[in-house]
Amino acid sequence: MCTHRTKATYFTRSTCTLDFKRLMAFTLKLPKGAMQIELNQFFKKFLPSSEPQRAASLKKARLKVAPSAFVELINDALSTIYKSPFQGFRGYRVVAVDGSVFEVPTYAKSIFGTLNASGAEVAKAQICNLYDVYNHIILEGEIAPYVTSERTQAARLIERLEEKSRQLEIENLYLFDRGFPSRELIRTLGSSPYIFRVSKAFLAPINRANQADQLVEITDDQGNQHQVRVLNITLPSGATEKLFSNIIDEKVTIEDFKELYQKRWEIETQYRTLKSVFEIECFSSSNLQLIEQDFYATIYVFNLLAVAQNYANEELKQEKADLTYEYKTNTNVAFSELKDMVLDIVLSKNPLKKLFVMRKLLNRIKRYSLPVRPNRASTPRKVRFACVKFPFNTRRNH
Image (tube, rainbow, N blue to C red; front, side, top):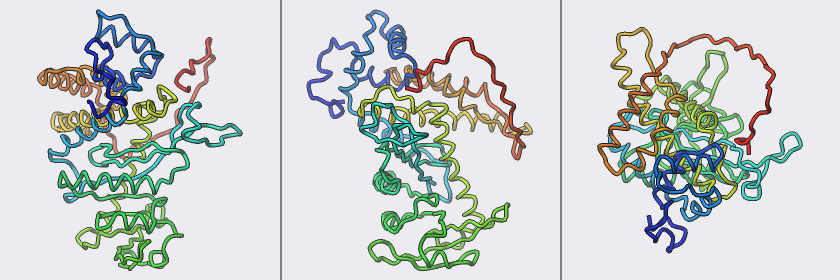
């Protein structure tokens, strides 16, 4: 705790109502409504004998906590998760790398920058995440100014992840979309296996490789030679996609590469879930420190939910093995159930109680499972616009 206080004298009084742990727990609840109402509900449940503090006092208290506290929480959880066997490809943890643009509070535009949209300046931030596509876990994440290069972010996060992976003796296989290939990133990756989707405007040796599967030599930004495998994959539509990789092993077939690269889509789903289910863009403040707290707290809760869903889905697979369709948990419902229990998980000092709450969570999210119907045709739903008597509450849109 001491290393994550913004000042050495903070949280030294025993009479402090909102101490370090409670502030962490409140932030992990991911409050999205009116802050005073959220705070009143928190006090009612966990501090019933105390008078709820004012929302302004909460902000001052949260500024005493460094965002690194949430980063350490994420890292500790990841160390625990990956000590157990996990899904991957031939012993590799498969990591998709991608960026996204998030909207941030208007008053934070001096920190993050703006995007001109339809004549109006909208405050935006550049996000980059490293995502385990088989286990649905965010391994690294960063929120930065809008003008930050995705490649720069990716290189920084990969170096960070590789250092942690060596300690856990885990090898990563990286998946990149066509906006990422660069000589510098190839050097950064070194011997770590990777697959890039590439546009026609990249390196000449790769552009000239027209065979279905062939080896070529390329150089990185420091002139080092690299042998890579170029694959021209024909899609069902008839179009051709070009991939290149440093996985030379012939046992890894073109079909393997197709399957691996299709898994990259999981990171797109992850961003959609963060925005639509977790409402990550509804930050609680325009202060940089609190925005970072919200960002990393959301990643922690996202991973906690992923672990719960992984266990629940595995149990559903066994319990409903004799049914026609495979059943999976509903993410919206699962998140709603987790929000009700996350404080019990975080604040409880009794390990048995934590296990009891997690078991209760698994049972509740399994109850609302849905069948997975492969190749199901979807038809656009008719949208009917009804008149509303009262205007919408735009609180969540800053």
